[in-house]
Image 1 (cartoon, rainbow, N blue to C red):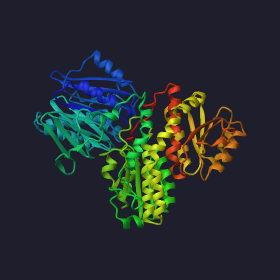
Image 2: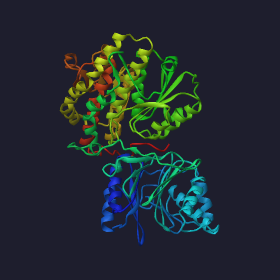
Image 3: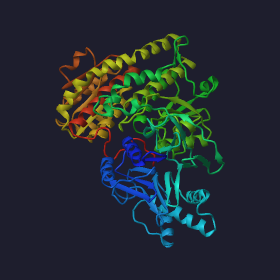
Length: 620
């Protein structure tokens, strides 16, 4: 959600900034802009719409210089207009900045600054920060501070930040400090790329790929001063610290389409590899269990657990629902799955032997982070299942498990979901073997898991059939998704995918709940997608399917290969390989991902960047 880039060095800044903004488009945005410094001053170019519109503007009105900042804005305060686009200017041009996050006390600060004579030109909360820093620069001058000393700029920023309530990721230029770029964070991620005589700044690692693989992740309440001479890192409470340089966990492969028309389709087809990556080095054949290096809990602590809370948002929440079924079946530990946006404000009775797992692709989701912190305050072990190395949740959790799925660029999550489900299966196996699960049962699960990459490759062969079915239904306005037990969360996820990228209203339900209300929606124009592979609930779901057909509702069935019983019942059937019940979510979700993809393409939707959505929701 929103994106920041910055550069200081010897190269033309505008080219690097525009390239970085293009790589951040997946985060979601509705306007963009850059500010570049040269010997004559600071040039600002900003435009509502896509980055390509900004690039055309920069071609017409070049911005020379080797120091600059850029931004993609996802509107919160004020509509998506040129004026509300970032960067914003403070005072009489003393400060130019871009901002991710939300300033909760902006209205009060705005009134105070207007009373002091500051003129606001936008409807954003961000402009308050720019004027506030300019105001404190003016105060520093009145106190006799050296206007050419970098400490003067630092003090002004620190004073301004202490007055803000809310979240921010900031990149700041100064009119009177021509070789300085300042960044600060609280709740909104920032990463510094370290080059040779140059530095890069971004909201995540994607704009840094190909420029440097050495990075420094900023923590909350940290500020960094970047010049061509070096980096200075300062924490609000503890002062200066030496930067901890890490290796960027992304490659050019993650940014390339590799012949696919969209990132979403590419990432769907990467799932055999990403599932294999999630399991690599974690299956212990001898002990018939799974091994993790980062849980940071003893065997005794894990055996004492009497409850697990899985907290997440969106697709990750659906993965958590699958995890609930897995852990309760394999380990017999009660599990609750909580929306992080609700858990952060609740006061649930959690025993001392409750463990909290935050599930997140980005590791920056604001609600999930807040829920994790709240549980930490109450003394509960808090672990994370996360994809992004160096993310805030990965750093702040007491321990956790990385997905190793690689960068996910498409806004609609696909490979991260199946990787999360894979890791939750491993976790359930690990906890089960610590308790009552037998050695032969563990071996059986491991054998089935090892076969999954090949099973997913076989499943992906349904792509052409799914495309043809999508051609038949892409005009619809409503759709129901129905499954039971392990396939109920898959129904929710399939409906979410259709909503996200094709803008078709869809709902997921346990199949048996149809007759408790949703069956009233059935008509000849409303298809139902039934997830009905062979397994324990097969005959129950088939009965639910027949109830829909009796009311002339179109049926699309996801069925096991060789199941001929559906030929005369369903209007369309997508066949998938037969696997055990607990592994069905990994298989049955694939055709639903492909169905939503092809539906969106046929409807002319922007598959990788659906309207109103952001990849990483870093504001509440």
